[in-house]
Every structure is written in structure tokens, then in C-alpha cells.
Image (tube, rainbow, N blue to C red; front, side, top):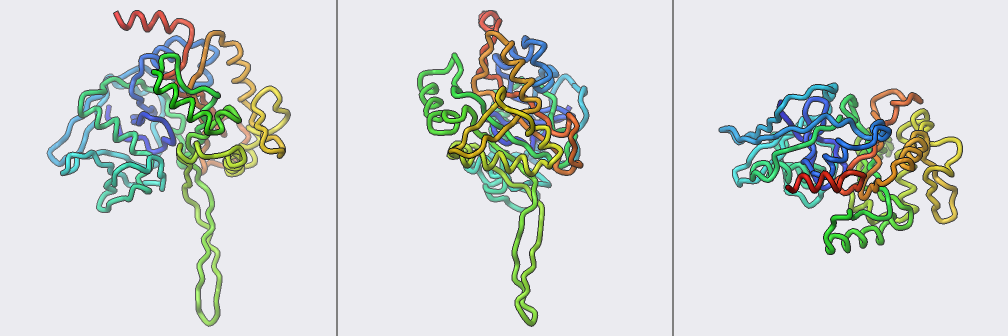
Length: 351
């Protein structure tokens, strides 16, 4: 089965690919063990694990890259038409992105200029493809071959809106080197990870934006044009946020998702879930399924979710609703998690 780039990644170090109704993530031994050995009561809160595949990359005569995974896995619905992301090898030897639909996602603003059919996109337009490019480069070098397949949470969405929140006051895993440990401690100390226990990694939001244009006919006429487009927050901006800014962006996400979907997140009391105290202002409450998740995590003795994230997603094109599936929540990223049984699995894999 063929893979392409995943256009809706808002954070993370490792680029995601997509095939059928799945995302393919470079395999990490610890994360693979987590998905295979996790407690059954955790499974409703994480993406479905659908096995692992071997990915091979080849280049045709025109320079187009073909990514193929084996074995074939088709246990989830295919992605809706929300943008095609392919790769080619340019004359300079650098991998380029070819896409017919690029939301102005500037995550990874340091990445090179990419090709969008006949025009070159600036690095502020190419978006989150920097991480995917790194993965493709490593596939060509032979550094990567195995990927884990996870259910694509936004596979059935036309215009996915995504919020990625990294949880916890500690981000480094037990196996982190001393230099990485120091870097992660500094990132936490200098961000809302220390003050709130949560940090915004990325956000992709499809919303109305107002543009004012002046037209002169016989007098000045102000025309207000309401247009919808994607706006983004990248991980660098998330690190710079203070508690007030974090709360403001969180409110923006909840407001945009609609009254019905917001009701799934915001009602009743919050003492048992997350209470974000922001400079004397009223508490901002996230609950709903979070209460169930918290109760489940309390029961997971021996688990430590270092550098894991909460992923919220909804479809901006779908009608607002209060149904359970109107806004989706998943706990993701377990490459640094510690859990019962991992030490034994790690020892066996090293023999």
C-alpha cells in the first residue's frame, strides 16, 4: 500500500505519513511495547494500534518518490479529500513536497522552500512538512524502515481542527541522557509546563477571519469581507506563552468548535480534572471525557507518561453537535513513557 505525507500534524519531532485510514509513525521500541502491552482500560483513550509495517522508498525516472508499506492494512476508513501530499527528489538532491492544498501552516518555519506544483512555496507556507521531509530523507538513507500504524483520528474529517497539549511538569524519560535531561528541564521551567502542568505544542484552527478593504467609488466605501481560513500555533509559540496567553488560545479553540461541541468540554464542576488558575481570573475548565481519562490514569499503577500529549480534534465542516464523537480526545506519544513490563521487554530486545 502506498503512503503519502500527513497534512494535519501540528507538533512532534517525527514526521507522520498516512495510508488508507491510518497514520504511520517511525517505530520506537518503547512506544511499540506500550501499544502492545498497555492496560485494556487505557485503549479507549488512545489511537487504535493496527500493527507495524515495513516502508520502502524508491525514486522513478521523473524524480517522484514512491513510498510503499507492507503488509497491507485496511481496518479503518480512508481519509477524506483534504489535501494531497507527495514527495519528489529535486535536481539538487533535496526532497521536495508536492501538494495541491497547503493551509498556511508555518510549523517548522526553518524548513527549506518546497514545490507546490508549478510554484515555489515560501517557508511560511509549507507548514508541518519539515518533520515529514526528515522521515523521507531517513528512508532514502536506510535509517528508517519500520513504522507503527495507528488509527487516523481525523480520517473522516473534511476540515480538521486540531489542538495538541503536552501534559506534565516533566518531559524527559527515564532513559534520557544528561544533556537531554537538562534541555527538557529548561523547556519546562521556561514555559507553562512548570506553571500549569501543560504546554501547547500546536494548534490548527479553521475559522472566520475579517478583512477590511477600502473601495472608492464616489465616496469611501468600507467593505467587510468575512473569509474562512486556517490559523496555526507552532511549538515555538507554545513555549513562549504565559498562562494568560495559553488560556486565551484555549478559549479560542473552544469557541471555534461551537456551542454543542464546547458543551462536551465545558460544563459542571472541574475539581477532579484540570483547573488552570490564571492570574486571578476565573478558572478555565476542561472536563467531559477528561474526567473519565483521569480516573483511568489513577488506576494505571506503575505508568509514567513523560512527554505525552492530549490531542483534541473536530471537523469544522461538520454541524455542531453534543454527541460523544463531536469532538475527539486521544492520549498520544509514548516514546518516553514508563510502564509495567517494559524493562523485561527492553532486556529481551537487546539480546
